[in-house]
Amino acid sequence: MDSSLDPWFVQLLAGVEEELSNHDTSMMLASLQLAAAYDPDLVRRWIREKRVDGLSMAKPKSREKILVEAALETSIPIVMIAPDEAVGQMGSVRAIRCNNVAAGKSVADLLLDLGHVRIGFAGGPKHSDSEDRLRGLKNRLLELGVPLDPGNIFTCESWEASAGIELGRIIFSKPLAVTALVAANDALALGLMRVAQQRKIQIPQMLSVVGFDNVPEGALIWPGLTTVAQPMREMGITARRKLFELISGVPSPEESAYPMKLIVRESTGPVPI
Image (cartoon, rainbow, N blue to C red; front, side, top):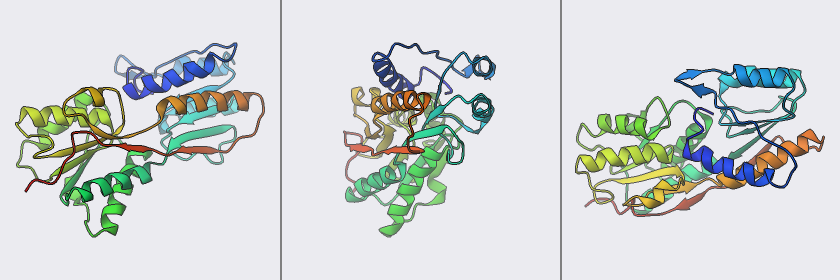
């Protein structure tokens, strides 16, 4: 996980801790991104020294492959939460993710019902969750005769609100090309909304904004952020429960998928006339 301060991770951790309270065990927590440098060595030592019985990985990317390989070599089971790739054929590795394609389709339906046809998408670094959300959005729009203009698909280098702010400064430096903007996560959406409001772009009167994940901050700001909720606490509980099962030798499916729930707040409204 890039940052243990990420609101997505904080909610996930709450579920992990809740499940741990039912067991006489302890958790070792490590962030791989410290002082702006990626460093997996501490966790790799834990694995090689067999100081852990199981490993949970939140939003692992391809660069975590060295940790997966080390765990497999020492027969330590792994549960990945929202991994960047499929985990099939990886032995004692299990995955927990959400149905992000369906979530993207639900956002498309909402915006089309509101009359929007000029829709943009803002994503972060390459990740399967973001790609699936975009695919669901694009496919549903195309099914209904509203293709997503490639020129209205934007990306930035991180998932933090600060990256959304920087991206917003680029997007909103020109006349608005869209009436609705879908961000691949809530942090980006909040950053985009901040810049839009600084530029006197009224939300939702001039621009509707949608995010994903349902972080608490989205419900506290005004206008409240329309989002698609991941059951992060439940995913954390399931991840820890599944890991205990793997440690005990109990068989389990390679992947568990959760539905996501559309939560409509004040950041979305009818297309401007």
